[in-house]
Length: 492
Image (cartoon, rainbow, N blue to C red; front, side):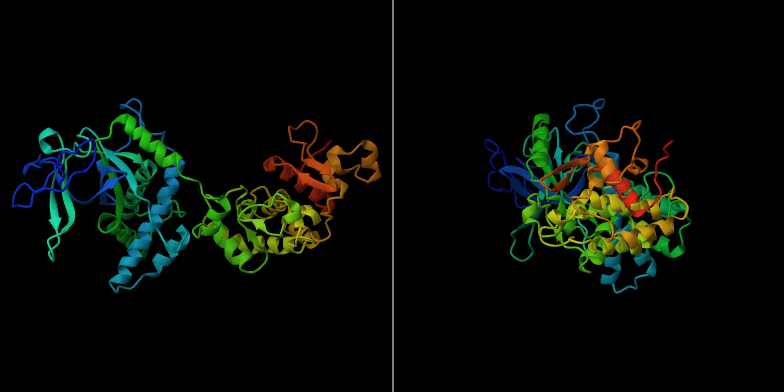
């Protein structure tokens, strides 16, 4: 396909004879018995020859390897993060079920209700795609070489219409492993998915041990669900592919450099923008459909630091964090499923309606008008919502307590001047003056390691600190005190 190059620069395509056989230096017509043909496009990424190829989803794991095991050889990869790989596996599984559904639609076949039921539990979204995986074929001459010196055999595929080059066919043998430079978690995730599909097709029940890709763990699989998984398995083995960019003959130091460049030179997406664009997670879906579209709250790309410029919006990343605490008791939406979110949605939507009713919230310069415009205060309300509705340790009469909280939320003094918020900075005389002598019973006692530095009161504004996870439980205790909810602490 390409003859020897000078200094790594590509030379014109040449053909050895009328047979149409081309070379990566000078291709031979023979190869070893383990060779398998792949159709590729040849490119020159910043001048370096690469193959771009599509490999069946189920096949990629078996023909690739990752250099992240120091005992197995030279390391050119970071350690595998199995949690990240499991999350990617869940995404891939959704993509394969969606692909199977699309295939049935294109063939004019009926779509069983089980497809929608399974996609609802997995978390449907508008589109699925995996970014290309970047690999290297080692132990060949840089750029591909020729079979005579350990290179790769190949041939040109021409267009039937005008004889122009359409693509190339290369022959990879078992010694031509694809060493993953960028994509090891996608590779591992793909293997998890194939193991899951094999298990559900043959076992009759959903896997009950980690990794859990489907929420009905340990439950029997119905006949119509088996049909869905069979179609997803078929998609993985036939038309669903992984796009791979293959570099040729890179040495270890070049692999490491490429890994660095691919992973460190990119700019991270703004968290709020990423969450705003994400239509897959049920928590973000809830926020968009139940909170934003209903006009309860307005979202912004980032939090306004200058309170005089505050337009009353809540940063999308904070909306997700607050809402995740209410649903999941954690400040991120990972692990959320429709099965968890849907039954709780009406309660969390009620919380946001009541938050929107707080005086000054959502208005221009909201942060100057009310402390409730600070995300840490909303996290405190979200935590109370979770504890009184969804916690396994919810107290007796929790329903009545939550109803009391919601009914009195507009009566709570969320002003900056309320001395409750600066209790830890008050003198004993000031505590007596403001009738806060019993507030300590609602707060962590002196034997705990709770952070008492909740914030500072300056120039008439109460600014809470940045260590939200330490602070919002204490703000929640202060809210309990003002509403008349029982203390969560047992003071002597």
